[in-house]
Image (cartoon, rainbow, N blue to C red):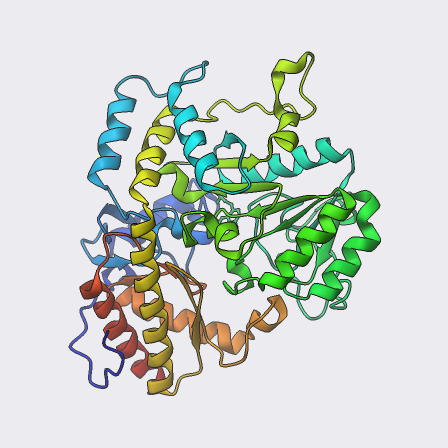
Length: 454
Ligand SMILES: Cc1ncc(COP(=O)(O)O)c(C=O)c1O
């Protein structure tokens, strides 16, 4: 893969959306009258306004101006087969033609649950939700019901969806984050009830001794420890295996439910991150790729823990869980096809491409003399505008100058045919091949040249 591009080919401009008279500008102006700040999803906002999408095909997205970009974001990692994969479109439309949803279960939910139980070491039973946020919410509720304890523990900086408990200490800063041994519980939203902060114990990611000691101290009250084995907001830095093993040991010792949030990291292998790292939790939260591009989430776990949701035992379950659209048949049908396409060979190919891309992006930073590096595993990567060693939330948190550099780089990629997250998150999809990725690396090298000469 090209990694030493010094004089890149002429770049194609895809910047029409940024013009004051663009269709995206007009749509945003209209949106501002009916959506707060013109926005329905904080993550997709970029200042002063984002381009609006018109369509997607394979690994390409076309915006409403008619500009086409290589999609290196795939709806924040959900679309592992890119856009409009023919087999997924066929399965979803066939199911949709038979009715969109029912107040009855459908056969498809059993098939997708069976596939997940077969692949995920921790899964003996599955419950479906409509998003990853909901999956985390339900897993925490389930863990509380199972242990009859009130508190949960999570890691500083880790994102687990839009939910009060899960959001604690998501954006802790040096002025409020406290000691590494006992990170402070900080609110993400204004008005977060103090009771929420009191019931969330915050742990330092990848710091085994501190994390274990704090879990030991709080064990009597802890229902769950939730950990993402490769947290995106902690820089997509993988957990150390000995760290995950220590969490497994201490939670087992104290009867605490260990939850792996694999909403993103299920992408890293046929058996998920837990298969890759060789550590099996009690519960796993899933989302994104398992829905074939439709809204989805799932909680999987051991039969013993998941029994808290079982309505057949007489009386209400220990953790009742409703949801009008849970296990929606269109989502289930699309998800089943998407997951079946993800064979061990498909993962191996993505891994190989991912490793090459990360190495090439790293090389581009070095060649350009711009501080930066690429983190990640498998088909996932994240650009960091820094040279330092990255291991935990505090080391990956950027200064304003570093953040501005990253935003400039990502925005220039956007103006030249590459779509990534403004936070530096990127990922591959199965329709991508060497040619697309060479294009990505060439564009990236050219963008870094611009950064060097600014
Ligand atoms: C690790 C993790 N957990 C949970 C969620 C929430 O999932 P959703 O956006 O489907 O609610 C996300 C979303 O990005 C995530 O990355």
